[in-house]
Length: 329
Ligand SMILES: NC(=O)c1ccc[n+]([C@@H]2O[C@H](COP(=O)([O-])OP(=O)(O)OC[C@H]3O[C@@H](n4cnc5c(N)ncnc54)[C@H](O)[C@@H]3O)[C@@H](O)[C@H]2O)c1
Picture 1 (cartoon, rainbow, N blue to C red):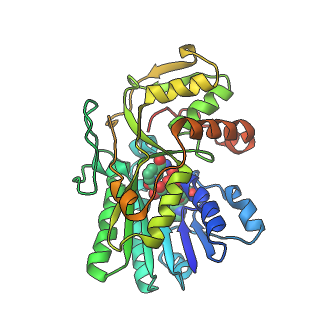
Picture 2 (spheres, protein in one colour):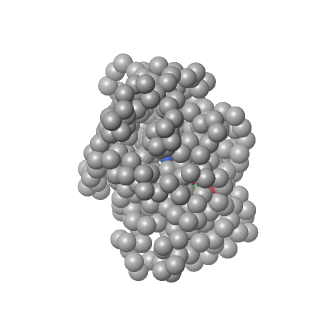
């Protein structure tokens, strides 16, 4: 089977390519990625050296390039996106271009090339924000209510995917996942930012009061869900992916501090981002009941592995250190 993974040089994409290659060694894996600041071809270097994946540098907004790469593809798993909320607030238009126009272009290329299956990777942020107090969770029938340029552009992409299914019969599946963490995540995101700040002897900046709640999942658990849904998910269906680990950002920071043997003197509160959603939580029961998925990593175990990885892979993250990034997706 020929599988095209867009955004395969990014955080989740590169982990997915590794998982996929191990689980399905018979597949031909082609990575399509334009290598923005968030793409790292070296994350795939081991697989490329063993000819276990092919890398194509290309923009998903480029019709000729995408059509060419998708020729003969059986399955497309679409992760390429602009993903960082702080960057979206500073400059929203690249998010609209890649996430909306790029997805539309990819769908058109799939239609022309008669790709047999298209899996779209999306986020819980399309559903908006839940109240801090309360136990409600988003389900696949929750209305879309994105509140920022990133989530709005991902919501737009989700609608396009469903429209190409309804209008042209493109065989699609969708998934909306909660906050991922793990190795190879850009140090602009909360957990790697906190870890790399501590490794540098600097303080962890925490947005606002730190009470914003996120639903955390270790990246490899998300990748196993993507593999299952892309193979066995019902065509037209949407699966929510969550490990059910809801934690306030300040608790995440405390747990990281504990693993470093440090106290609150190693963190500081900073001014909040505008429109910062308060709480996300997802109901993943369809994924569990229909496809038998369950998470294999608990939060603290995943966190320990992640900290170990950043301790031993300074060469990967040091060149990426942002000058002004703040903690909190
Ligand atoms: N990280 C999370 O917590 C999370 C949670 C839920 C859903 N998602 C979704 O999962 C996907 C991957 O997220 P991530 O955190 O790995 O992102 P990332 O920012 O680490 O990687 C994005 C990748 O897309 C590539 N890319 C960007 N624009 C492109 C373009 N125009 N053409 C081709 N390639 C392009 C980048 O080079 C990079 O390799 C995204 O669609 C994101 O919305 C992420």
